[in-house]
Length: 379
Image (cartoon, rainbow, N blue to C red; front, side, top):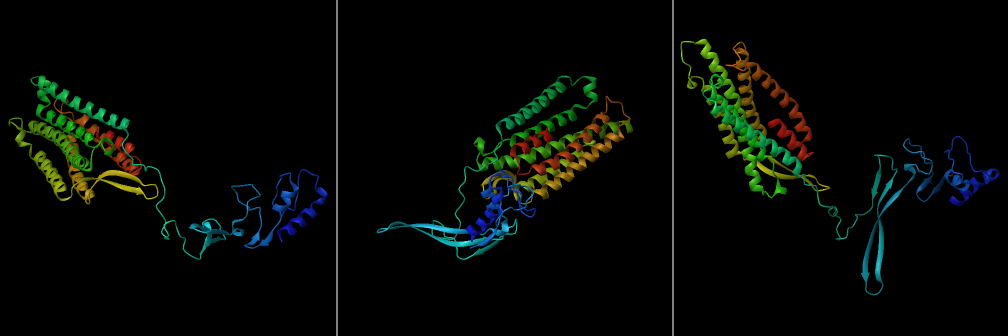
C-alpha cells in the first residue's frame, strides 16, 4: 500500500520533476527540500500494520516536516533474551511485552502483555548503573575562609581583652565597666568557636561519632555566646541607669545581675535537655534515589522545638537590651554607648531576617554555600 500511494504522489508531480523545488496544496506540509521523491513520501499518508502513517506534524518548536505526528506512531517494547544451547549455540529470542500508542505529550497510552524479564530472570528492575554519587562535601577553600574568619574573630577578642586589662585603670575603661566588656568579648569568642564545629565532615577524616559531638557543641557555643553578649550589654546599661537614678547609693554588679543569671541559666537548662533527651547528631541521608546523591547535616527529632525555645530567650535578651539602650539614650556616650548598641541590634535583626530565608532556600542544595552563609551570620 505504501509503495502504491507514494507512486501516485510522484505521478502527480511529474510535470515538475526537473524543478529544484516541489510545491503542494496549502493543506499539505510545506517543504523546500529540493528532492521531489522525498517530497512525495512526506506528502503521502497511508494505512499500515500499526495504523495511519503520515508526516508533517505541526509543532511550534520544530519546522522539520519529517516529524511524524505522535498519535500516528506505535512503539513496541521487546524483551530480547539470549540462552546457550549445546547443539544450536546461542539462541536469541524476543517477546513483545508493551505497546505505546497515541503518544501525545504527557498523555501516552501503554498496553502491557507480559512482564519484562531482566537478566536475573526476575521482573524487578535492577539498580541503575551510576558513577560515584555526589556527597556534597564541604569545599576546602570555603572551609579555609570560614576558619580564617573564626581565627580573626578570636584573635581580636583576645587582643581587646588584653587591651582592656592593660588599661583597666584608665578613666575611659573604668567608665565602660570592664567586667561587662570582658563578657562581650568572651561571648564573641564563644560564638566564633561555633564556626569550628561547623567546618568539618567525612571528607576531612572525621567519623560519625566525632561529627555528632561537634553537632552538639555547636548550639552550646552559639546560643550561650549570644546570651552572654546581650545580657552583658543589658546589665551594663541597666547599671548605668540605676547609678544615675540613685546617685547616693552604690550600685554593685550583684544588684543588676538577676536578669543575666536567669536568662543564662534558662538557656543552659534547655541545652542540657536537648543534649540528654534528644541528642543533636550527624546524619547523612540520600536525597536523590536515582543518582545516589547524599547530604550530611546535624539533626534531631525535636530540633525545631528546642531551637524555638532558645530563640524566644534570645529575643527576650535583645528586646531588653533594645529597651534599655532607648532608656539611656540621653546619657553621656563615655558612660553609655546607647546609640551604637541600638544600631548594632538593628543590624543583627536585619541579618537574621534576610539570612534565615537564604538558609532555607539553600537547604540541601549546596553544603559550601550553606556553610558560608552560616559563617557570615555568626561572624
